[in-house]
Image (tube, rainbow, N blue to C red; front, side, top):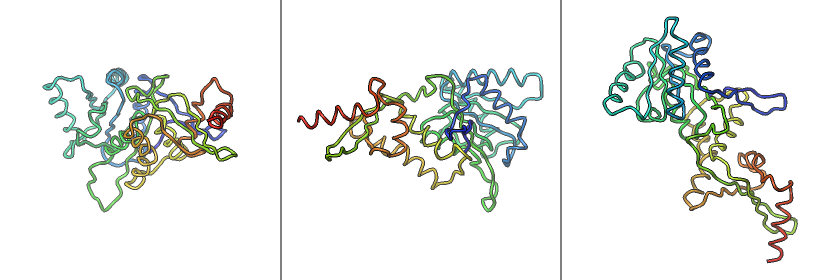
Length: 281
């Protein structure tokens, strides 16, 4: 798995954010540079995006930029199709991306509808940043059908971040991070962040694990990514709250917490106030 971005001189990962136009051009660049990707199998790409509107726009741009040259089959799948139209689209998708697919070049632009509901595969997956469980599902469409399990069959997953302040839509679940620590007198201190999109936990884990040189995905690595990102978050939801508690300095929570400290307080001010209140009690 690779992230579309780079590590700055200060060691921090910076995403090369993609709007619909730039994402379509990115897909086109990978298509035209296919031989350098180091993947096996026929020339096919599945592009996962997070919203139907984004899927339609990316598809329309791809049609435009491929119009004056020999172009691949371009397919679009999303949840707004009628039942009859969806059946026709799915049949066409299986024709090019199913287990018995023909080898003709093709690009599929789709949304969550193809994460698990369609048994399809491609050598290259390009996907919007999304919650870790959905991301692993999307990555599972990469080289799903191996012709010879005794040999390696190379594929690639590239994660891009949508452009804009609301890049995380439709994954808009909000949480607060609660940093729990002990003061000099052993009293518990609790500092609370501003509300933030839960998907930022996925973002920071990916930046940490794959930001420098990418990440080789296997069953063990996928399980670790899920546990590191979602286990405590889901346990928090099941307990009936959206306040995610963590120990001071614990990652990945600390990095996200530092980004979302309440702006009305100077560093350390919240801790002092909370400790004073607890001592008074």
